[in-house]
Image (cartoon, rainbow, N blue to C red; front, side, top):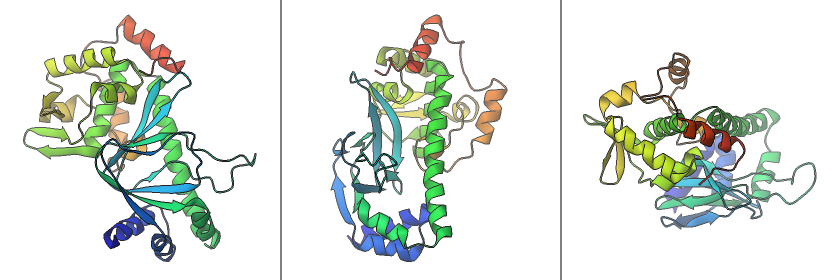
Length: 284
C-alpha cells in the first residue's frame, strides 16, 4: 500500500496541505479498494471519517425526500469526498454526509478519522490553515454555482454543458474526436442534469442524429468539429466533474454570444421540465 500512501500525500498537496502534515496523515490512513458499483458511504451517515479518492471515479448523489436522485458530481483521483465537519458546526449537532458516494469504476480510497485530521490541522500555522480551508470553500462555491447555473438552463442546455464537462475531465482525444472514457447510462445523464430519463434519451438521440455525438462500444464520442464548435468547454471539478484542468472563460464568452447550443430552442415541454427542476420535483 506504499503507492497508495504516496498518492494520498500528492492529493493532500493539491488541497494545499504542507508536505510534512500530509505525510503525517498518510502514515495513519487506511487504503481501501472498492469494486465498481460499490457504495463508499451513504447520505445520512455520521461524518466522522474523511475520504480521499486516490484512483478511479466516484459519483456523488443527492437523494431527495421522495427518493428522487440528483447526480451532484463525478470525482476523479486526487479529490476529497464527502463532508469534513470536525466540530459539528455551531449547533453542536452530529455532522452527517450530505451525499451518497458510489464507485463508477474500480477505485481506491484513503480513509482517515475526522478527529485525527482536525488534530493535525490545529497544529498548523494560521497561514497554512487558512489556505487549506480556503481551498475547501472554493470547491463548495464552484459546486453551488454550477447547480445554480443549471436552474437557468433548459434540459438541452444542461445536457450539452454536462457533456462538455465530462469530455474535459474524462475525454481521450485522438483523430476521431474526444471519447468520454466513462460508461454512462441514460439514467446517469438524467440524474446529472436533473431531468427525466425519457427527456434525456430523446435529446441524446437528437445529438447523435445531428452529428454532435456518436456512441461507440457504450461510450460517447464527440467528433472533432463537434468538440470545438458545438459543445461548451466545461471546467472539470470547478463545475463538479473531474479534476478542473480547463479554463471556463471561453465557455462563458460563447454562452454570452449564444453559440453554445446546437439545434432548436427548447420546447414548451423542456421549459416546463426546467421549471420543475427549480422546484426540486424532476430528478428522475
